[in-house]
Image (cartoon, rainbow, N blue to C red; front, top):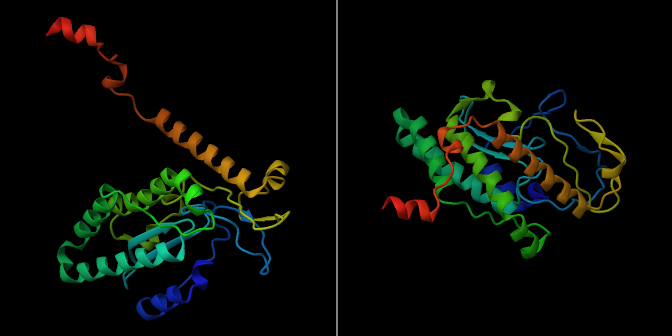
Amino acid sequence: MTLSDTSVQKLLKDKFVTAWVNTEGDTEAGGSFAHSPSDGPGSCIRGNGRANLQILTLTPDGRIFHALAGFVSSTDLKAELTWALETLAMMKKTPTLEREMVAERARDYVSDGPQPTSDTKFGAQHQSIFQEHIERGVTRDARFLAKHPLLAIADFRTSMLGSGGAQFFGSASGSKPGETIGNVGSPTREMLDMTPDELRELAERNNRKAEHAKRLRRPRTAADDTPPRSEETRASRD
């Protein structure tokens, strides 16, 4: 587990004031299996459960300058928290331009093409399969910061970092629990009978459907209705 890593604990203790919020009752928060304390961690890739877990780094007066959604490994979390500390140091040097600086760093993060390490149980083969999904989630966190630099925590909503409202994400290392927690409700019996690999494949299919639906909702432009010119057409005009 990420927060069980002693190096993560030391970094948080030395450099941050930590707090947590119970999302019970948050209609935008996700749902999951109801695990007992003795259950081992299930397999996850970075960004799984974006509406279940969100880590926000705030200024002392409650403005967000770093954000993470979903599962993040101990290696990635330390790298992200180091990035956050660097951002805070830069904010202190340029207090009159801190919003612009946070937005610019977030845009640079996106354009640089993040390469998350995500040291999960999957290994290199599974990691490469889901790399596009991982990078999309990582850049989504940065795009949130670029769009809402130093957003007041009072104005933050779970769906800003989620994938379109409440979602269910479940993973188990052994037999899956028969009950769920969260406001999404119980998954179907089919999901309870799925293996962890099948659950991941289902999550990927749902993500692809959501991305496709989002593209369909995009306003059409003149370019959408203009057929591409063929090579013959271009040659005849030249």
